[in-house]
Length: 286
Image (cartoon, rainbow, N blue to C red; front, top):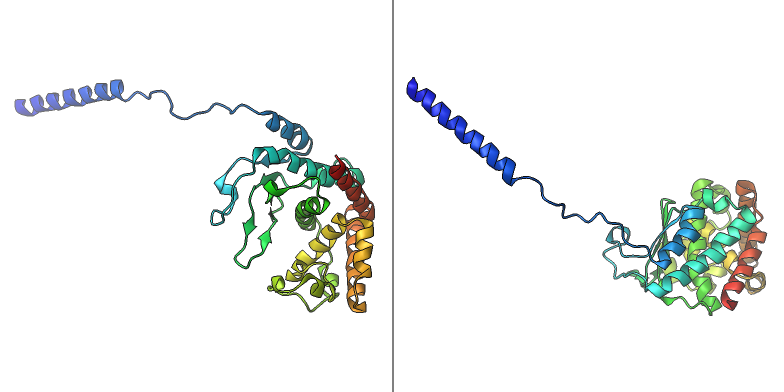
């Protein structure tokens, strides 16, 4: 009995010593995590003033592997290409919609993040993905390193991406008449759209070959292409169509786009086109 008590006392003493030792040796030291906020650059401040504060649109130009397809050879944009790319988007997309649709239009319906990628997003079939709209919340723009602000065709191709992806966002907010659209060119849609020459696609009633992928892309391509064409360019494009069926199909699609903008958003689509043309010219001449 005495032996039991003696052993019990020894065990308790050892436990106490261990606890004291843990208390003295395992005190948390200084955190190894860096919670300091990175210093904002002049570019960061400009983005906040131009995009984040007025429109609640965040711009991500620094590399983040969680926002890109890591199976592709992609890289962040060169720093000196970021602001010119965003100025083009601001002037032609943001200002045009704000002028015609009202100051709050883009504030209410917009992607909450724009991701800029410097390189080409090349697909296995040889096509390029110029942009992606994800759930209406994020738009990724590729090839920002290759923008030439003095070249109208180059600027138009780049701005076509945001115009196209924004049409998808508008459609997610208020759907277009898919049944009426599908009836215009019921044949011609194909997953192999990239195998067809653009003139061949034009002559069966599609504004681009990519428009043949499905009716949603057809609507977005029709609207966005009209927005990047000048009025004269679009009229010349239509005048060059040989097939009466194709000409009428393209005009019917144009009319549905105009009707959609008016009924869904009370917006004059032709006024939007004219504003985009004016602002594109301002970018080129700057």
